[in-house]
Image (cartoon, rainbow, N blue to C red):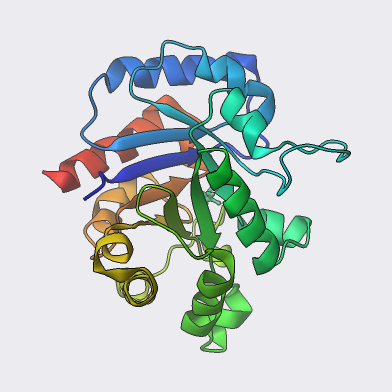
Length: 250
Ligand code: 13P
């Protein structure tokens, strides 16, 4: 079974001075008992990769589906890998909303990440209107089917369930609601990719995860870690979440 994963998504935050947070984390978690990943803005990627960062891995927040070409402002998965990334986030709801990315786009980007040797962290999640209309499992199931390409394995793919209404709002689903979605994602993964790959693939929860709520969230079945936005920007906060994940492993 792969280890649990604490992943930080810095989004459009962070200047050179923020790199000190990673050094602090690397000192505190020299040999963590879970995987730790930080996805900084692309401007910091290679500098972060070059830091003495111990076991902390570095990832991109998005990639283009093509390996190179005339796409001003975009970055290919090969460029991320070349800069030191081992992971790439695909299909974050902010990219789906801000850039109109469809499930097919997300699948193409995920495959591009795989071709470059990256592990893709594929994001899914319903809006508040969809949840209130009772459509959560249907929406997440459709996103999963359309965004995760055939051939997904535990090594190449991580799923992140991030309800849009919980991102950056301080609102968090109940533990039962998280458990219901994660269990339905697990069933779909096992049905499609088999007991070994689908059963082992990590499913992260994301949306207002903080040190204060991490322990209870990590106690939910089929929650294999977290994808953390705001609370990943400061070593103290992200460190608290990593410690909670380590404690959940025992
Ligand atoms: P917050 O932790 O800031 O709610 O963001 C979650 C997220 O979108 C991570 O990708």
